[in-house]
Length: 224
Length: 246
Image (cartoon, rainbow over all chains, first blue to last red; front, top):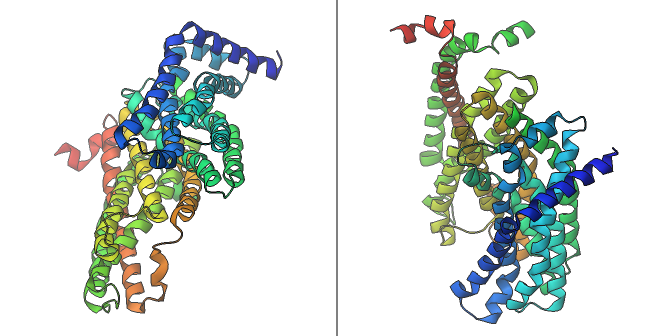
């Protein structure tokens, strides 16, 4: 099998598994929708204020939704022994891990990107900021999946892993939050979002290179 | 040189050495602390704008420095432990973490105490305060991860990975927070304003930093000795120790 073939095989398998357990996927998506919808209820319906906080609210909700879906990434495969088979397979584990992370983004990250404009409209965002919001989430959610995978691998099979993964990954998500929400705010204030989006893209490239590697190391420790 | 280094890389030989080093570093802590506090609280002139309240700087700045420095040292030892599989290095990393977290917390706490009279508020979302807060979170993550894993070998290695990921992230977080802040409100409150400070103030701060440094060494050695005893309790050298037999 070629490198790309292995990668695609893992992606296909993980998508298939996710498709068989639709409720898990939908749960984190609805979590995102509900958290975002709670903010106007807590803060009040003044549109000026809502427009101002919209990027931050959507981004924080995306962070939390991604974090909640992280335990799905490796836990089931760890429990039924699939992960050990993967570690023993005659292909680099890093490649398989990269495939799993990509599948995780397709299942957990991409739906957030697609539904974000609907939620943004609730906060009275204009069409241009909505486009920037989608673009920032499109660059940012893979970054969250990549960084989160390290935390998910480290807490594999650890007691209290669910809470622990939030403590480990949320501080590391902060740059993505700052540049992601900042891009939308910069666009609204007329400064242009190009700088923020470039930085977000740079962080994504950096994480795409290092995170699968660190995740593989963490998985090998967990499997010892 | 190298034989000595490797000899003391084993807990069996490092344990008594650490025991001998502790009183010396404790003495240095007390001397630096006494002179530093005396300079800071009695000798240093009262600040023209900030009055007496600024004197908390002597604790605050030194604590911030140590919290950042200790994270790098901790990550270094954790990385050495991961790379070379040396038990003592990982124990050092675990021993440093609580002291580092304590200094990060102390820095935040004294910062709040300083901010109230100076800026009229306990907290501002200044870039430095925010990144110090995140550093505190990173310490907590490291400690919590190690505490959650029962197998010490796995705890060491997992902790090393999160410490190294943290070290890569700290500069990214720092600069992103700085940029975030300047985008929001411009440079409002800068802690570097006091660069024209009197020499006695600078000397006092340096002495306090040295005091905290020595204190960190004392606490780390004390803690690493306890960790060594705990992890090696089944070995013969621990059983032969006088304090264990009595």
